[in-house]
Amino acid sequence: MTRKLIQRFGRFGRHGNGAAEVHVFIEAGAKAIHELSSVKGKDVSYEEFLDLIRKIYRERIYDKLDEIFFSRIRYDIMMRVFTLTYAVSQGEHVYSLARQWYPSNEALINGKPIHEILRPSYDEYFYVFAYRPGGLRGRWCEGGEDELFSMLRNFAYDHYNHCFTKNPLKEMPAIIPSERKIGSVKCDFMTFNDFSRSLSPRLILQRQGMSVPMSRMREFENSYVVMLTRECTDWGSDFPEMARLVSTYENAIPIYRDEQLTTVIGLALFI
Image (cartoon, rainbow, N blue to C red):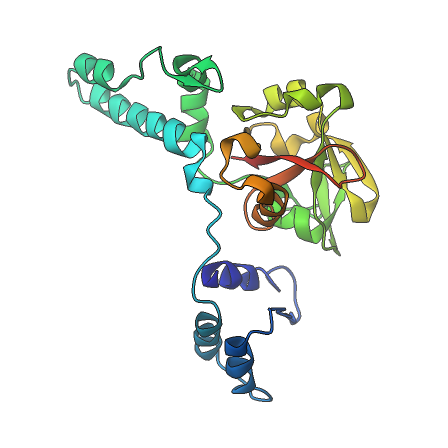
């Protein structure tokens, strides 16, 4: 929890001139009241502030993102591919190693043979290992780039020019699929193009009164999507709350059933 708070505080005041004011709201537990009372009315240094946060929050919120099928299995496959590629480039004999590592055809994920889901294409090797080592980027209307999801959450979007304005705006992006494609919201890993075809999704920016077909958004066109539902997470009845929480600090957007944004049915992680 401490690291998440520090990461969020670090995002305030990063763009442009001027000061940034931060308000932290926490439950009024006895420990929190005691620690906060000890510094009431005092100026604290950055180091003292970090120490205060550590005293109030004893442990991080464990969201279990590292346990989803993508993290456990596909990441392992990708790293093995990298190892094999390196071995081949060094002229080593890797056939027996590849046979040993490759998953058996009998294994299933969501009813599909594992080799159909996990066998990456050459394009995927290229994107994962060479073309996109970093995160997704957005473009400022006045020139320059920045981290896409920070921009989506904090600045107004000009969807006609595919850029972000300097107008600060606290936004909570949401995704809604086409009504006839709600059944396609299921645990999967796919290119953004496949995601667009499967769901015909629209990005909802409520505070801007905006509903944008994601297929037209250049910001996402080279990305990959890990789609999560209750079935492939350990969040149970807390799935809606956890999906919203994860979307505040990861490159992720909750998927809702309709434009009322009352029912969360999935979470899209973009890489």
